[in-house]
Length: 366
Image (cartoon, rainbow, N blue to C red; front, side):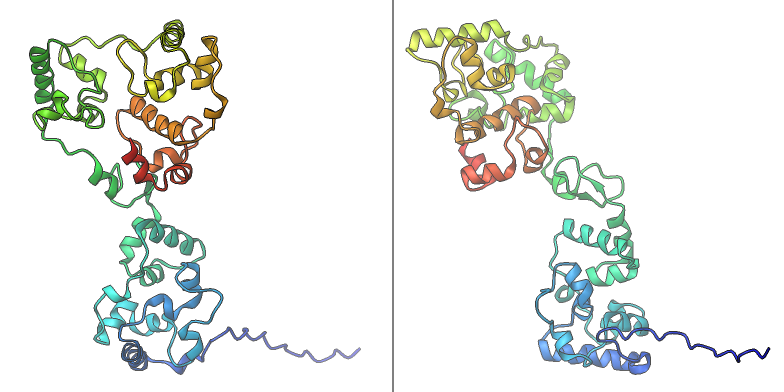
């Protein structure tokens, strides 16, 4: 039986990608001429992502709904990959074309977005050198982006090896001229001059204002936040100075007695703002709500009925209470990242902005 002759089937041709040109269309000289052509036409060097529209859109720097200039003029200019293939890198090409000023070519992306973009492009298969060209950074910087840690202060990226905080939080960290010895000596001097040891509020710039001793004599006394930096907490600073920290907190019974006593004297239940900065002999509003879960629950425990018109979950009063509670718990002002974490005791940053208009306006209201 005769065997039919074998017919070799040619391999399938690669699909012609959009805007693809034959491989021998460009060489080094023509790529450099194209870079100069763009710079002459637009008054600045091209950005790497402008000649690589898919990457530019993935980075959020090109509008996905319209054609970019490179696409409208194709094949007038080569792609970023073509330039890199013939010139070694995007930046070497710019330098060879006499367009080595990096500033006009740097994508306008903040660091968190650059890190997120680098990670996304890496997952999509882009090499370090490709990502470096698109973000206008060195490939070693890309490597740092891809292994960035999370800042415990704000949740942003940490790209510096061995750093515990991101650069922004590190700049905000209190830089104190006080040593541990100087801090404890200041505590002792305060006791000698006043006859009593200071409280955290006495040395807090937020509360010690006006004619308060700390404010009048500033900067003689260190701020209370320095205790956290040097000793870990205000209580530990007092112990290091040989002082006896006051007993912690109020009991539930004492709070109920104080609430009932206020109502008996004032003719009605106390309001949250009445005890935000409590008069002598009364717990703070933050202590009350921390012990009972809410201001209304404390009033009910004392046999009083709260005004239902004042029980909206988040308003100016309750947002400021959230700020105060955070300060009492942590000894410092909260930042937006603190409130972005899931914790029902505090309003999220969006709620703060809705109530006050902005985060800074809420801080100013305190």
